[in-house]
Structure formats: structure tokens, C-alpha cells
Image (cartoon, rainbow, N blue to C red):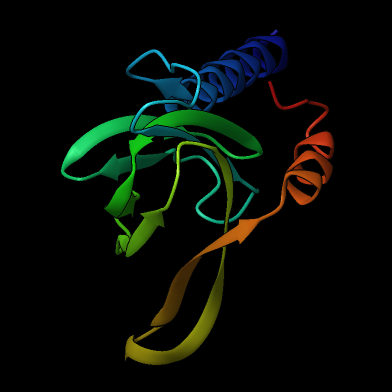
Amino acid sequence: MKSCVVKKAILSATLACATFLTGCATTQVLQPVSPPGGDKAVVYFIRKSYPPYIHEVRLIANGNMLATISDDDFVAVNLPVGNNSIQVDVTDGKPLHFNMPVERPDRMYVVLTGDVTKVGQAITGYNQFTVYLQWSLRATPVSRAEAEATVSQFGRRLN
């Protein structure tokens, strides 16, 4: 009898944890995207899966939050023609800042990738140690064909 109760409790806790983790990482565009034209381009930011896996990244352009992106997903946002200040931010991580020139009202594609590497460790006490990790992000402009190939790995297509 106890074994059955314990198994049900473990199953319930596992399902609750899975639901919580799934709910943590979402893709959401905060403003509707209009077609390229006038003084605005459509830029696709494509996030390939990289650590930390359960967090979404926040996409901020010119000081305005535009979207959140979960692993293996993408968003399309409008950016004005000119030089744009882009920030890709993750909770508990250092943000990636870069300038993105938009030369004309067209479609552009950027793939976001990253990795985590162990950079050291230290013994901090009896049976205690600390591992130091370095997290890095990369933003790479790609062609439409490369963007299509990347999102097809997610089972998706660009609009």
C-alpha cells in the first residue's frame, strides 16, 4: 500500500515539475509584425537549442522588449532601417549586445546559438566543490536558405 502511495506522489511531482518547466520557456511576439516596407524590415531571430535549456531569451531592440524565444523556435519582428541596438537576455546569464544595421526594408535572418564550457573548479570545503562555467551566445546573420534549413530541423517553416 505504501509503495503505491509513494509511486503516485512521485508521478504527481514529476508531472507538476514537467508542467512548470514547460511553462517557463515560451515564444511570444509582443507586437504584431507588418510586412517589410517604408522604413521597416522584418527580421527573423531563430533560436537553436542551447543551455540554459528551460529559459527563454528576451529580445530587446533599441531599448524596447520585442519578444521572448524558447529553444528551437523563431520570431519575426519589425526593425527600422538604420543601426539597431540589439540585446539578447537570459535570466542568470550575461546578455549579448550587438549593433545590427538594417540597410533597406527587406527580410533578414539571424540565428542565435550558444554553449556552456567548464572553465575551472575549486574545493570549497569538506566534500564541497564549486564548478565554474562560462556561457556564451552567438548571433549569426544567415541567408533565407540557411534560415529555412535551420527551422526545418524544428519541424517548422518560415512565413
